[in-house]
Length: 336
Image 1 (cartoon, helix red, strand yellow):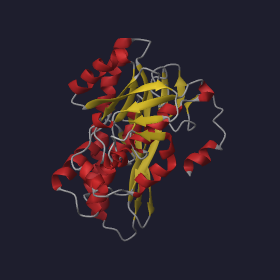
Image 2 (cartoon, helix red, strand yellow):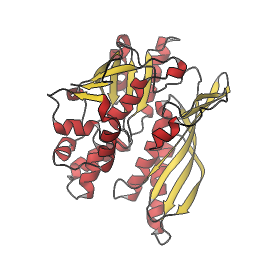
Image 3 (cartoon, one colour):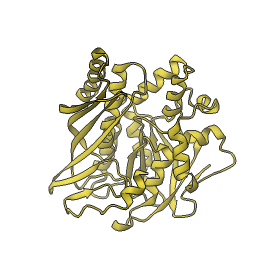
């Protein structure tokens, strides 16, 4: 619904808006000077795990991720809290402490926030960062021939659903939490190293983080391009067997622990995806699975793909080569 509404709204006319809402990018970018711009984002949601401290950490990592996906450095944040009027204050404190611990890890200062009384617990942040306006990574710009890299495993949506049904193994929950609480700053720094070595002609052509729209939804946004800025649409070929899946995710999908957001994603953009017969139903579901605090999806020149993978691995970030960019065809996305 929101996507259709935004398409009917006028685009920002302020020339200092370098990135607005028109391509569903991860964050907005506003020019301050030739050498500096603001990068701003906001994200909040209801608990995805039972432990309040862990929930706060996940919410913070998720909100920070959009800044990293643009190539920015977070500097300040405002917390957003929805909490029941008669709720346990210790739970609220644990949530806020968890979020604060990740903000400290990110060297991002929480300078205030806003809270409301709400029947459902909600928590997140509005994050502001700084970015070099000449080094902004957008979610469009992928070129034919580019290699697609993905950091982090996928499957948090089906695992969270299995947790709600009390059908998730403790080891699988721990692996999911470790992934969701891992900041994308390390991955972003590895990409910055590759970009610095390349000089003016950056080999990094598009970056986005994989969150609620699932891997395929965010891949679709990357492939659509931006006709208003002469960024041509492309097509993606994705190898489902090359993707890393969280422990227990394939089994959870096969057992039918499918979140409502997965079905919404399939209804929204499923018609732009073609699956080869070799792709099993559980893998098809996982590619539509909404992620929380997911990894980065990167379109990079083939000449730099190996160096980028090595740089990411060298910093302890798992990175998989999951596909390639092709000239625009119909359908937009092909999964083999």
